[in-house]
Length: 222
Ligand code: C5P
Ligand code: MG
Image: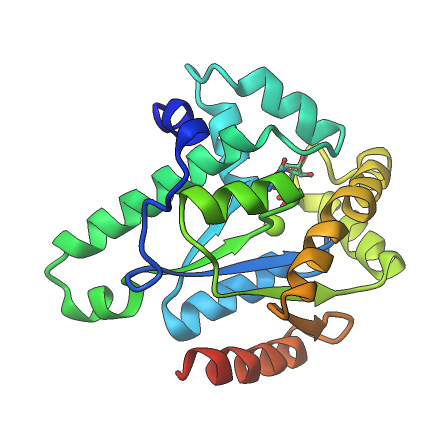
């Protein structure tokens, strides 16, 4: 992950917002971010990058130097140091942009070119500031708002089959704590800039998606 070294000192974005559209997708654990992103991908052809999925993949990569660090943070519901997560995101974005630019499938190119849903990121203010400074400014934040009791119910249900090391009662408690203490300030930060689209995530997936579609279409002129 060579980008880690360059990231620290970089003070201008590597991608231009003219070429790359980024939507940050936030919400507590179990709010339905992944479910909604899947549907947005199917409907509009966004590329979906889940920060948590990228971290889990890096954790499981045999020669990763960050495996133990990531595992420790995920089990304890803590936020992995931002350099690691941003480097993973940037590398994944670059790969997708390269693939679509060389693809001969015009439809795939048109659909995917530079439209990213970045799911579960930024979870801490330093991630937000650094990503917008060094990678690309986001268009807006889609925030899935859901009460903790409902998120807990969903996570425990998902934990029966997800195989995730952090879908257990103990880790869930820690993840909620981190969400309130560390991630909500990020939502507040964007809210103050009038860049948050808040969606009621208590509803059924279809209903949440209908609201999401309306908001997305309005803002991106789709
Ligand atoms: O989004 P997801 O629930 O898959 O994230 C799982 C875990 O990955 C988080 O609880 C956190 O430990 C880590 N994570 C992180 N920084 C992010 C996203 C996820 O440290 N931006
Ligand atoms: Mg997820």
